[in-house]
Each structure stands twice: as C-alpha cells, then as structure tokens.
Length: 258
Ligand SMILES: [Zn+2]
Image 1 (tube, rainbow, N blue to C red):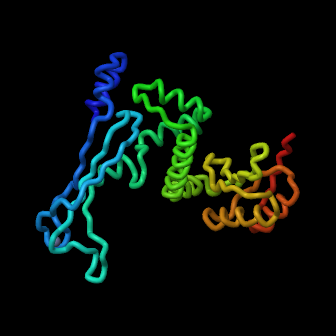
Image 2: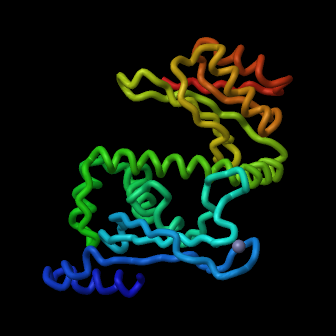
Image 3: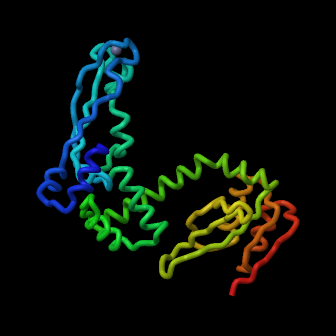
C-alpha cells in the first residue's frame, strides 16, 4: 500500500493515471489459517466488501475474507454464533462498521482540534489533497468526534503515566475552570494539573453548580489523591466545592480573571 501512496503523489497531476489508481481493491484474509481448537486448516466462510476513504491511499475497496473451522463452527454447543476468523490488519486500517480509515480520522482530528480548522476548511483541504476525497461536512464533523473519542481512550489508557508524573512532583495542583461556547447550553469543565500540564478531567456539565463541580472534583481526588493546592477563580460555589471535595488542602490560591 505504500507503493500505492507513492504512485498517487507522483501522478496527482496526471488525471488519467491518478484515476486508475483510485478505486483500487484491497483483499485481506485472516493472518492465520488454522483453528484455535484443533489447529486444522480453516476454510472461507464468506467475504464482505466496502468502499473506504483513506487520506494516504484515497478511496479504495476493502474486501475481507472470513474463515471458519468445519468441526468447530460455533462459539459453543448452545450458541448459533459462528466462530469467525478475520484479518486483524483490516480492523487496524478501518474499524468494524466504519468506512473512514484510522489515518483519515487522525488527519481530520488534528486539523480540527490542533490546527483549529473549521469543517468547511477541512472539506476543501481533503478535496485538494492527493487523496482527493470529497466528504460531506456532516461526515467530517462525525469523524472529528470519533477522533476525540479515541483521544479520550488513549488518555484513560495512559492514566498510570500521568500518575507517575504527578508522583515525581510529589503531588499536583488542581487548576479548574469551566469554559463554554455562546448558546451551546453546556459547559466544558476542566481540571488541569498546572505542575505537569496534564488534564486530569474534562467533562461537559449543564451548570457550574456546587453539586456538579463537587462530583467532578471528587472524581479527580479518587483518581489522583488530594492535591497540593487548588487554583480557580471566584465563581460562586467554587471555593466551597473545592473545600468540601478535597481534605485539608494547605493553600487555596485564587487567581482573579477579569
Ligand atoms: Zn477446529
């Protein structure tokens, strides 16, 4: 597939060759062709095919082959679910049930959230790129949201590393505040450790009520322990929410934001 990418970049000004490189077909079968129970060679059960959109490879058709073992066809004796063997590479390229490949999700997500591009700008960018992918704005919005979902999972997966960083500073400073976009009707409440710069929690809440803020601060305490200090502005309820969520925080630095 890397060869395909090179060819696409090389021939992007030659419409004829470029078009031939579009809509290529990729077939993927399970990496292993033996049954996990009896080790006998598995057989083809069925194939399924879908159009996929990748930033690196453009539009292509992914055909996947699923294998099965004749002697161990079902998950269990009482189950009618077939024990299917599938290609792990296929899942790595594009998640089950989706058509936008992982590389495209990452590209769209970075354009949206790292480079602060609007959805329409991303749409034009993809159209003009070697991939020449024309996606509706609504799809690009959903893809950007999927990227956020993956980021959240990654953040949770590496919580232990955040804890290591906090421990190396002998604790953390809970810097918290809410931010909102006009008319959105929701507030993104963020707690950041201002010593390491790690985001400790980021959740949407309807209002910055004592109850909502306390519940999030308590989550932070449950995950990372008691902070060395808390830092916030003087919104109503912040100080008491902080005092009631954390025990005996030695200093309450308050920054006035005008
Ligand atoms: Zn078998």
